[in-house]
Image (tube, rainbow, N blue to C red; front, side, top):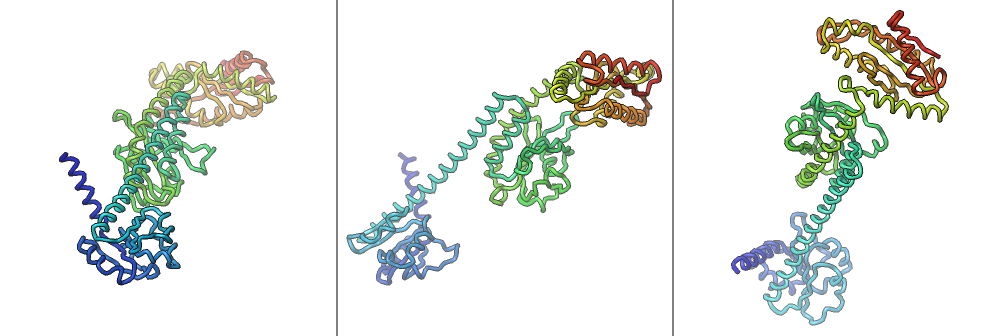
Length: 484
């Protein structure tokens, strides 16, 4: 009972607070007596003889309008209704009939009153102000419900993607698309932490101009730019105006490519382990991001982090099954599978497929004199040099020991020989392990074979390329030999 009474008193108090400013519209006879009664209630009154004479400052906008019934016949009455659509209105008539005021009755927050006593006016005011309060509360609830539905939709979409696919790219795309729609932002990007270096890698972005476009995997050092600062400090941040924030890096394509004006950046963590950063750029309404936007993102980012960690783990496991532990190049399992696919494609499209076998000259000398750890480091550096020498469509695999194999789709024997010679010169002129204080000069032997010019099967192609390499190895070393 005590609780119920307290709630009722709170409701009455809220109604009293809402009737601070009142527009009193009507003739002098109509306003007489009403004004004194309302001022006794603590209201601030602005009197107007007609709706045509209303003029006020924005800060004087009314909480309640009390008007004489005759005002509905004024020429500007419809415009008046439109201007005060969300303001509670009481129409007072001294006649027992309310004919002719249908435009009032068709709008919300209107209460017709046959004025007989101040008590009836007080009741009408409390009733319509309470109605206004309930409408405002309902609007807040509806807005909250809409937000919750969007959040649920986000969780459902991410969960659906996880159950249907553990592809990291698909998960990232889903997270960005849903976050962007949820916050109503112009762009959204995800930067993931490289476990080995600690750098942030710009994995994915979501903008109209980037649709269907491959995004450069830019690297950002911890502390660099707003995203780097958030990753380093592991603290979410809202930047209303990036031009006034010293952390903003206009040289970074991650932040400058979006023509960022305002940014919201949130760390993605799972059990205190920083996975990356979710960066949201510019709201579509051109307003800065709000605390409500941040609260919403913080609620969804934990779910997103779990999805990303699970997908990234799956991807790493998948990569381990096809990559060499030391050099991180593809292994022989992947080489055999890819070679079969590329041979079938070459046969279907009547194009050439070339294969290059490569062996490091005198590699045993490095292992024997400097140890296997130094030899392993040299092989890692060699693998990176080979990758830089080839196209993105070409495949480099470690075949075993100090042997490497390159698969070159749609490459004729002549072009394959030129590519092998270019790699030979790159190796010959490179100084290996210079940073480790060794400065090795190394050479390598290359063998080239092509389909269909010199071989007609996977086994035949590999056998001929291997034989070509060993012909160089057993004669001159540091050379290229092709069987065509």
